[in-house]
Image (tube, rainbow, N blue to C red; front, side, top):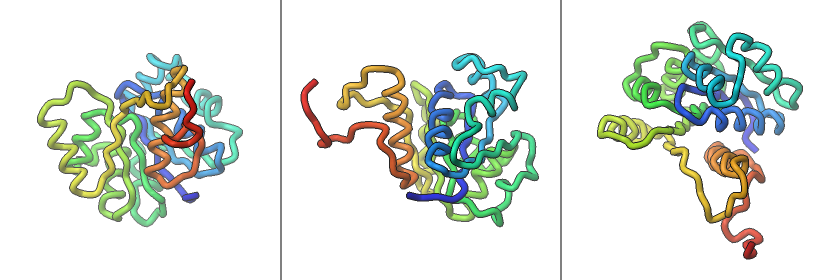
Length: 202
């Protein structure tokens, strides 16, 4: 299992549940999570998961508190946060879901907020960075930005569900995607049945 500090970013793309579930699974495994949520991300948490964005500390404690790992939240405007410095040791970063605006900012080194700055640090330090883009359809600029980052070693893991494991619920579909992210992080899990493992007909 790959321990140490991990940075998780949640942006304003649809699919906030992916980021929430990833944080919960990591914390339950005793990992250290540093969370950054954009303002648009908080809007989506409210719209999709009924989080009270006016009581952010309460929401974070309710969904992430009392678990085995350590959790720290960094406001998006806090450019002096630990994760904004290359001298702060981390294993890497996942932006899940990743909006096209954030992806563009990372691809062009904008560093306009803490999330983009932290991703820039990951790139310059040669650390692992995984982006989970959630948009459709994609136009040429989206694709070019993804290609730019992919050529720099960034892992692109689009939020695409699979059906070979015959998901029976929304939760199982979410767990499949989160499991694929954990695979890319080299973190062990049992969130979904792998192809060839106990593959009986249902």
